[in-house]
Image (cartoon, rainbow, N blue to C red; front, side):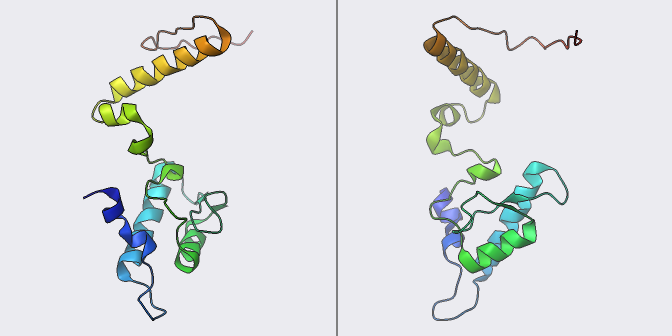
Length: 139
């Protein structure tokens, strides 16, 4: 089952012809908020609100996010919760290729960084990412 099928509840919130919420939508919103709060590891933290009006630009407490989603619904096409630290595999070829190996993903990102520096400034820039950085005292 793909993400569109798993998250179809996001865009199906009201019963037809009625002003009642569909139970799957209420459960999904609760799961979304729980996941979003869990990703930031802070109590009483504010999270981005993915409602149609806020468009992930406003930070609100979790209860306000729920209310916004109940009343307004999710922004269209927010299948992957990228503003809530979820990776969109359709935007990352490296993630698709090496989804089970974070080492390969990190190495590829490091190589991409080195290439960007070289292209932008015309210098070879390479850091041994395997070595641990030593903390040097401030002068």
